Image 1 (cartoon, rainbow, N blue to C red):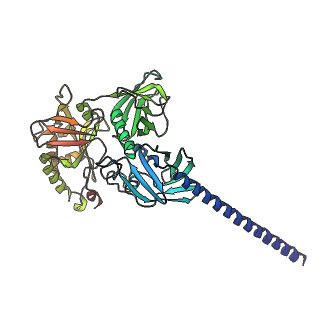
Image 2 (cartoon, helix red, strand yellow; image 1 turned 45 degrees about the horizontal axis):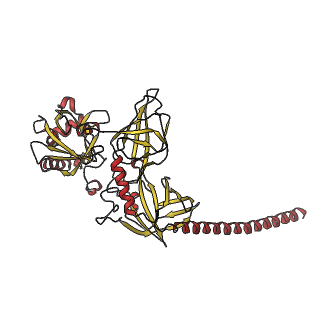
Image 3 (cartoon, rainbow, N blue to C red; image 1 turned 180 degrees about the vertical axis):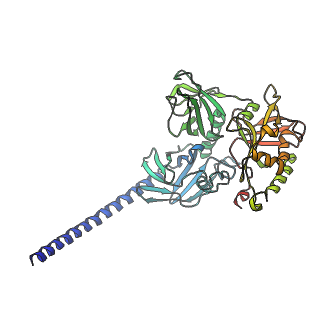
Amino acid sequence: MKKIFYFTLFSMALMGLSSCSLKEDDNFDENAAQRAEERIKEVKDMLYTAPNGWLMEYYGNLNFGGYNVMVKFNGNEATIGIEKWGTNHVAGVDTEGNAITTTSHFKLEQSMGVIISFDGFNETFHYYSMPNNPDYRYDTADGLRGDFEFRVMSASPDSIILRGKKHNNRIRMTPIPADKTWASIINEAKETENFMTSRSYTLSGADRKDTVEISVTNNGNYRCLIFEYTDSTMLKQTVAAPYIVKADGYYFYTPVEVNGMQLDGIVKGDTDDHFIFRNNSNLQLDPVLYTLADNFRHYSWYMHYDDLGDYGRHNWDNMLAILETAGPNEDKVKIYTVTIGLTSDGKLAVSMTTSDGNPYNLFSIRRVSDDGTEMTLRRNNLASGTNADGKEYLNNRGWKACLSQFFGANDGGLAFKMECDNERNPSYIILRDTRNQNNVIKLYSAPSYFMNDAGYYND
């Protein structure tokens, strides 16, 4: 009986403890929920304190750098304007000089902190996070790897710091001054970028730690500087510095260390001969001005089917027709990229990446004019100039005829006059055959697919 009595008392005590615990948990949950609601309201009220909206320093894939995003919150809607990224991006400035904007729903919710979610589809904003991005098909799953849901890390009237929920990039928002138009933010960034941009720079200045040459290049016309040098152990070092462009220069996503030097953004200044670093005026970038011929030989340039001239198009059409049934079981072989220029192993070649191989053909540059605007291209012979895939494409798939637009029908070489959009940092180079006005070839610096038609890669 005593055992039973003790057991009964012990059970009642447990029930009492359990009852108290449940009551306390209810109070805790109620307090936590109340605090979450208060925090959500606090952040929401903060979003409304900027009458001209917030300027968001937006980063997706850090290799592409950052872009200015303007956001104005009103009720449960957000109106958004952004710098234009690609051809199919509904953004930038319209023909009347106004910022292009779109409006969609947003919400705040609690999930281990406050989350801002742009949950209503917005073609301007969700362009950065959409899969199968029409202007960047290299990463079909994540596209440009942007976020549309963000954790609120801190919020004040001066700044709101966010973190992308999926990709964890830091996003900073500051109030846009009342006298600043959204279009002016976009235009000033573009003007600054045009003023400062160069395909290549060298790092110099009184605070250089040694005589090691440090080359600096733009990552394929994206907003990311690549610093390269050989360290004291003779190892090649590469440091990437993503940045965003504002009226007064470049701001790095985060400070970087290059050969023992701390670097954090560069200032626009009054001259385009050099640009000092934001955190150290005794260090600077000096633009390297290449001739067009040197730009052509030092980089890889991308061809697009839609930009083929009349002279070359029918040959490419013939090869594409052959590739329709060239794969195993007569499957279609697809061309992903066609490039001309410097390869990763330091050779000059016309190269393709296809669904069944990587054909290439080496070539040489002859007779460059003194000003670097004219040159002659000549194809190397088969024995020294191709790989096995290249021989297959040349002999059996019609590629040799396609290459005639660069080298001539008999491989005797063709002379070209060149032009571009920006001598310091061309986004494209146009080659014009000096003897055939119908042979015009436009080449792009940004990595891009050969076919612009997305359906070609989806079927």
